[in-house]
Image: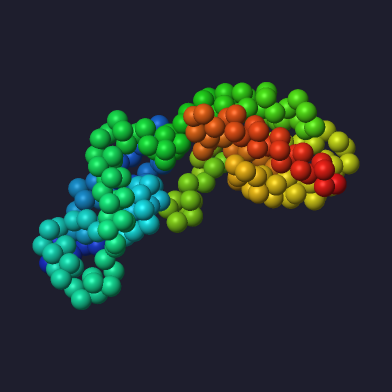
Length: 231
């Protein structure tokens, strides 16, 4: 399309919604195009998000030909659409981080996307070993994480999760137990967003950051105590 636009003398505009500046390691995102690749492919202007995969504040960005950017900057609607100083400051910090490949790969979103499955499995087993010794048991199950509906709605990331099962047979059979546990996890002092899958509560460990395992264990135990006290 870029080559065709050039032969016709018209700009080629590419809406790359995800905001992927540089492809993370591990092949986690498949063939999702990044901003650099789109520019090299011949796009004159590229629009993308400042949040989502870029990981900055909610904003819209436009990259591409300098002359076209200058024309857009003079458009009257620009006064209504321009971001505030706080947004610009946060965006500048994130872009500077992205220019450093080492620091960019250590940022939370790229690190979560590129985590190997064996590391995820080890994390799930480590957390499960600390959880499954009280009023509930833990089962390690395969999981398919989603990057995000606004960024990559069809991309699924294989990984591992911890399935929580009450040891009490009556609680395990009741469909209300999982809903109550899910709500209690969200309402805790350190909220935990679990996944309700086929009537069970599962904890996907992909987004678990360093140093958070102990907090997760405490939050799950507190949530279960709340469910048991309310029955």
